[in-house]
Length: 74
Image: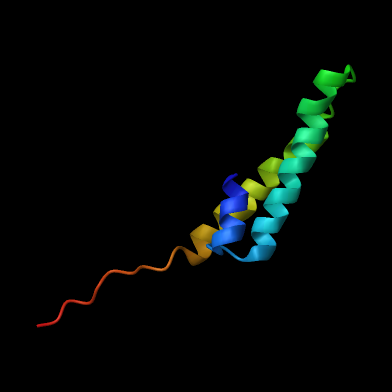
């Protein structure tokens, strides 16, 4: 939902938000889904979500959000 909102509202570049969406699906398929169907989980696929979080955090540190404070007039 988080990366979906970022993608829909264009708060970060859509490529970065789309990468996050794909990594969430890979994480769910590699970690959560095998527990339900009886296979062993793949811990290496769990790092995909961490990679997308690091990429998003790095982007926000480098670029930040646009500050929309009104300019004070004298």
